Image (tube, rainbow, N blue to C red; front, side):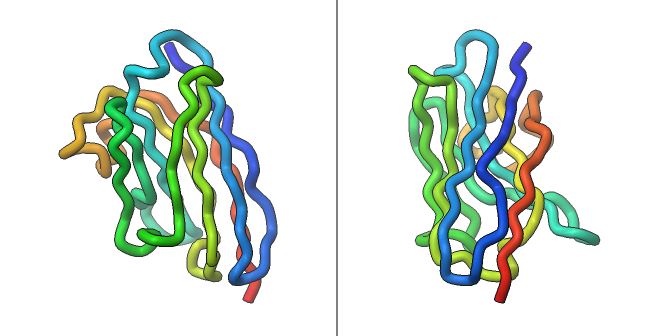
Length: 124
């Protein structure tokens, strides 16, 4: 069993930066694939970024070049550094953990454990 607790959300102006963190409890953190998803009001949850247990990273086209996902296995923590934020990036951001393969990493159904979500609001 893995429990995930996300943090770091908040209100930021367009063009600003935020770093989200997600701390995990449980064992074998380094063997999990970790993902970040977001959901805006009235929209479906969408993949943002993921990091495979091999440390290979993946990004949605909408955030590529602006967001960076990383993990620190010694601290059981995954991060999402978000730069050049746009109003369209505003959403509740969720971290997730699972045994997803690299080809299924962008699919929410590939993850077994989810954090509670943290709100990101970007003002124009």
